[in-house]
Amino acid sequence: MALAYDSYFYGTVCHVCKRNDANGVKLKRCGGCRMIQYCSQQHQKVHWPLHKSVCTCIRSVMHNRGVQYVFQRTCEGFSAEDWCKERYNVMLLTQLKLGRRLSEGEQQMFMFPRVCKVCHESDQEKLQDCKNCHCVSYCSISHKQQDFLRHSMSCHWLKLCFYVDKHFTKAKDPYPLICVPIRDKYEPLPCDLDAFISVLMTYSKDITKWNQPIEVALLSELLTCPLTLLYALEKLETSFSKNLVIHVVGAAAFECIFLKKWEVILHCLPQLTCLDMVFIGPEIEQGFETTCMLCVDCQKKGRELSTHFQSGNLYHQYATSETFLMPDIIVAYNCGLHECVGTDADTWLLSLPFLVKFNQTPLILTSYTIDEAYRDFARILDCRKDSLTVSLKCAKNPFASKRPYRDWGSENCDIFFQNNFITLVTPH
Ligand SMILES: [Zn+2]
Ligand SMILES: [Zn+2]
Ligand SMILES: [Zn+2]
Ligand SMILES: [Zn+2]
Ligand SMILES: [Zn+2]
Image 1 (cartoon, rainbow, N blue to C red):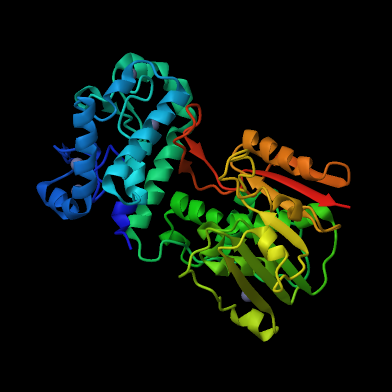
Image 2: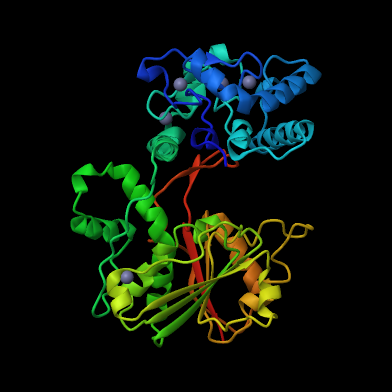
């Protein structure tokens, strides 16, 4: 288990305590890799046993390239795509030398190195960080000005992202409690997640203790999956019986951690007594919690939330297995159907037909960006074109998460959100 502070990398702050110049500390750079900073010798020492091996490998890459900074070659006007490839290649090269998989935090050293946002200049002495978000740097005033408009769209989100990540390195129980009241009769969802959360906050007793932007972001991260599903059900205008079987396909930590969030569905659908959640996907890990205790009210009503995990299985394998439970609705969050098309890594290829195999069983897809949403949708159309009712087509999801993540692959947009776009189709 990695130490919390080591799971996130920001090149502009002390890696251990996440403080920066604005906190009155003078940061010092690791003399080996020149990629990571510390507020004090003490914090450098604390991190050294964890950093030593990767530092040595980065130094060896620098030596082979005859450069002072590992990304030095890249300031010669790389295109966005080249810059992406460059970071990826250096990351793989380092990993190869290291002989083990880089940790999440180590990967971020290569995804988000401290370089000029405009020209990728890596001379650390030349760089100045954005004074607000501390997430981007510039080699000159003119490059800062050149990027001003673009960056002003994401600066506050990047700042929030940093504070949420920092929150995870400090807080023992990082997630706020979910306190969605039980409905006696069905109430339509409010217009969006913000509206839903602002109603919730009126129920919260210790509201003054809330660090609002962070708590709201984290609460939205928990609520986005169940509410996206409820939103789709509302669009379908079909009524379900007392039991609901949901298949979450391509599930990973995002869906399986904090299982209690799924209880929200029981609280919002009064007629429901039994909710069966089947999580299917190669990324489901051992060690996730597997059961969840329902609230006292749900227990009194005899309600059940059953969770089943098909770890290591792809959907077509599960769909043809003996344990298969017929779904009422199938959902693939942040599905990435479009990724890896035509390559050996395309794990969706054989599973796709099963997503739209069952007549009258709706399928929900969500995607990070609109571009990805259209490409994901196209793949579904390839499988089943004619007999498909489209209720939502690559629409902005009003119940998308509000928790920003840094996007290392896109030059235009620095951040992305979970479940940002939604598609809803039903085969008939
Ligand atoms: Zn420190
Ligand atoms: Zn180092
Ligand atoms: Zn520059
Ligand atoms: Zn900024
Ligand atoms: Zn409950």
